[in-house]
Length: 297
Ligand code: 13P
Ligand code: SF4
Image (cartoon, rainbow, N blue to C red; front, top):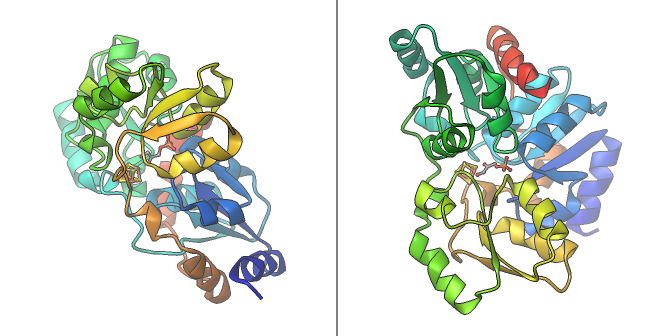
């Protein structure tokens, strides 16, 4: 029996649902029950009734699924699939920052640990960060850990944010020249970038969107060609859902090595051996849950 059949049979037998992020390998997206961005995956995880969730994404995403569904077994097929940006701030560092700004409300990007979420007032994803910050009426707002998403949100909302020096090493690689070079070859292409990109890259974009926001934009927009400023894994879904349209990655090496750790072999052994279970201590889970629930309200 081929590996895809084995995974699907085992998922059925064990009452498991497979969730995958838009950046995962094509074959992972193809075996998943649901593929989406961080916000969609959180919402889906909160509503599932299966016994097991196999999370094909990075650690903070599986952790978020567990925080929302502690009665389920949440499995991360590769326990080393992390997010370097999420590791750029610890709960202790955030507590220090809060001491310096005692009146500030804290917004944490979902790309953060459960401990950091537990120290925050409200969580956000790239899809809703602008709305979440707009919703807050505090004079002072701390935004962690992504300084680029934070500066984009600050620009759009007109609110001054206290930023942390975190960033995604993959998105930080893009330079404005990369986009300008491609624009020379494809002058009619729309430029769509993720808000984790540096500000000088965002300034060149026609649209700034979460990964699923990008998928919606390229489907609904009349243009035939798009320059895509995010991890190249997304191009697979774009091409599949939009035959005839052309998608150019800003860089061929725009790859999140952590997302690519998820392979079919690891998904199969994760299901067979029910590994690697992601759990969060209950006191931290409950505090992190409050900040995630405020976001989902
Ligand atoms: P999205 O929520 O837009 O899918 O982004 C997640 C992420 O990690 C981007 O690097
Ligand atoms: Fe983290 Fe960047 Fe990978 Fe997204 S692309 S999971 S922010 S390292």
